[in-house]
Amino acid sequence: MGHMEALRVHHKANKRGHASNEWLDTHYSFSFADFYDPTRMGFGSLIVINDDHIKGGHGFGFHAHQDMEIITIPFEGSLIHRDSMGNEGTITAGEIQVMSAGHGVVHSEVNGSDMDPVKLFQVWIVPREKGGAPRYEQKKYQSDERMLLVSPNGEGESLIIQQDAWISLFTLNAGASTTYTPRKKGNGVYVFVTSGNVAVDGVRLEERDAYGTYSEAQTVNISVGIDAQLLIFDVPMETR
Image (cartoon, rainbow, N blue to C red; front, top):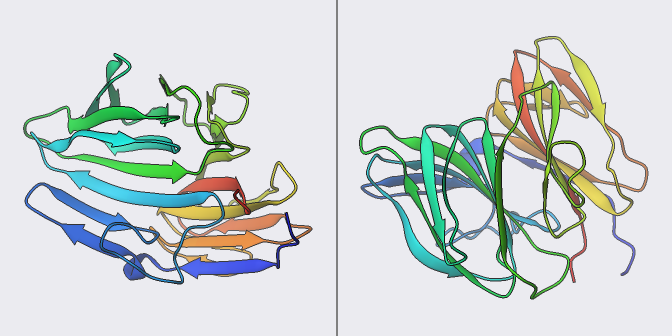
C-alpha cells in the first residue's frame, strides 16, 4: 500500500446523477449505471450512495451480487427483502439492513406498500476480501445523537460488515458543534447531509450535499446550522 495524498472533496447535491422511470426516482452520489463523472468515482472503499424513491407496489426484482457489502437505510416507508439464503423480512425507517454478497447472492427489494413510496439510501462498500459466505442481518436502531450503525466487529448495537469501515448517524440540534476522528489509520471521512445544514471543516453543506476528507492527522470539525442529520462514513481509502 503506497502513501496516499491528502484529499478533500465537496460534492453538491445538484451535481449528483439522476435517473427516473415510472416507479423509481433516484440520485447517485457516485458514478453508477448510466451516470459517469470522473470526479465522482467513489470515496475509497465507499462506491455507492443511492438516494432511492420507489413508488408503491414496485421495487427491484431478483438480481445477483457478489463481493460487495450492501447497506440499506430506509428513512420513509417500508421495504420487503427476500434472498437466496432464505431470508425474508420487512425493514422500515429506524431500521438498517446489511447484506454481504460474498461469493454470490440473489435478492429482491420491493416496496412494502402498494400505495405509499419507500425512500431509502442504498450504500455499497467494497469488502476486505473477495469470496466468503454471503450473510444477511437487519435490526432496529435508536436515533441517539451519535449512533453507530455499522462496524467491522459489531460494537455496541451496530451490524457487522466485512471491511474496516464504520457508518454513523449523527442527529444534531441547531447550533451544536462536534468532531469526528477516523477509527483507523488510513481511513477517510465522508459526511453526507440527509437533512438540515452544517459546516464541515468550514465547508457549508446543505441537504444531500457531502464532504469527504483524508489526511494523515485528521479530525473533522462539524458545526450545525439548522437541526441536521448526517451519515458519516469512515472508510479505508485504498482498496485491494
